[in-house]
Image 1 (cartoon, rainbow, N blue to C red):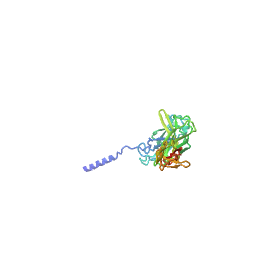
Image 2: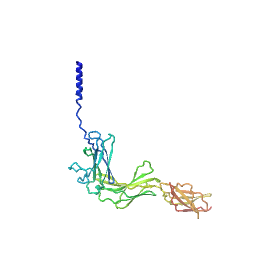
Image 3: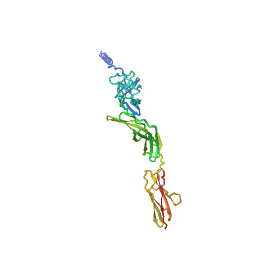
Image 4: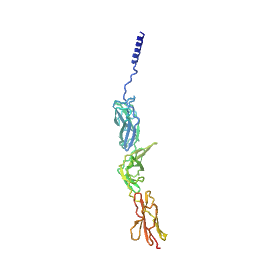
Amino acid sequence: MRILLLLLCAGAVLIAGCGTPGAPQPPSLEIPKAVGDLKAVRKGDTVTLTWTVPEATTDGILIRKRGKMLVHRILPDDPASTFNTLPAPGSPAQAAPLAQLPLLPALDEKRAEQATYQDSVTPLLQSQVHSDFVRYTIIAANSSSRGSGQGNAVEIPLAPTLPAPHSLLAETVSTGVRLTWDVAPLPSGGRLNPTFSYRIMRLQDSTKAAEPVVVKQVGVPPAPGQMLSYIDTSIEWESHYQYWVTPITSWQRHGRHGEIVGDDSPIASVLAHDIFPPVTPVGLQAVFSGAGQKLFIDLSWTPNSEEDLAGYNVYRHTEGEQPVKINSDLVKTPAYRDNSVQAGTRYFYAVTAVDLRGNESERSQETSETVPRE
């Protein structure tokens, strides 16, 4: 009998435990989390927006239904502008988005898919809007157009940029590579107190995993329709280079400042082939010395200052003959002793300079010296 009672009590406990499942959970509203990492970059008149696509809802589960991402744009200082796609303060909450992108169901929690959208600010720059900046934000919404609100906002300056040069010429000169390009007229007026310059970029083709480098940033002359020129003296001879020029707008307002990178010019390719000889030596002098059987003429001249100078050649001739090089190897110093002279003969001398790539200068002005008879 006691065993029967124990079994009945145990069964009652089990039944009571199964009858308390806990508080029921409401169904998910499938509202995506807000976008919090929106970034914006402007190049020329094109603004590129990037952000991480939400993969979870506000209640922490993966998004399972198709939704949408609404791209909004607003001019903060001009709320009544027709370019605004967000409502002004006090107006209805609905506003037409600048663009609508699909929000697809999430595959897993680690995909971190990136979304991209591009907007042109050309209409804003050409209009009479009063804002110096344009602001963007993203609203992620579910299939019923319900969202968790605006994510982070980003601002882009509305200062004008110069158009890219139509042409860029690159040619080798004795001191490096000379670049020449056309300059567009400066914009009149202009928001954010803009100043304009050009950034010269260079890429060395022969370098593995090469990265573009900034060669120089040069200011824009005030007069329109001019050509700008710059010589890149930091090149390596016999190397292939690609050059392009990018307009830069620097802006400032109330302690804020920055720069806008314009569109790139066409690329100019060039082989920095050195065909330019050193400067012709000057100051050549010849002096006879010697006694008895040891006769010689000493030559000296002003040294050349080129960094790539390899040495000098010495040329000699007598009356009515053609000059002949008399040194077998390049002369490394600006002096030479001619030991193969004969008494009673007048010799004429000239020297040239030679660089590391074998380019030889013109012959110097001749000088002469006579070896006296014994």
